[in-house]
Length: 109
Ligand SMILES: [Zn+2]
Image 1: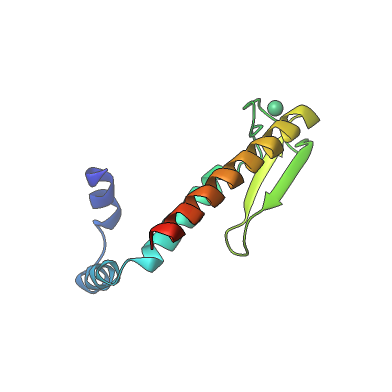
Image 2: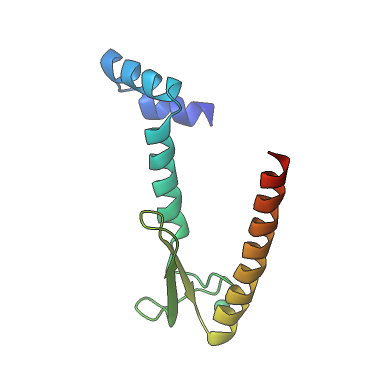
């Protein structure tokens, strides 16, 4: 990880490094956003079924869901209705856990 980062910034000049350091010092919002976008790009694959990881034929992603808040849209593709249904039931459980955690955190404030 350290080597990859070193490799990525090896051609930056002093001014760029200084700006980057300042950005991290202020919480690194821009850096986090760039990392998040890259993660989304890798995650938002229409090449594999989100549930069973079966490879999907190009242009044949039978079912694709796009969800999430504006600017943080997530894309999930499925090979069949079964996989889509499984994902949807799973997402309901994830929402329940999220809500529980949130209300617990509120209670601790
Ligand atoms: Zn599938």
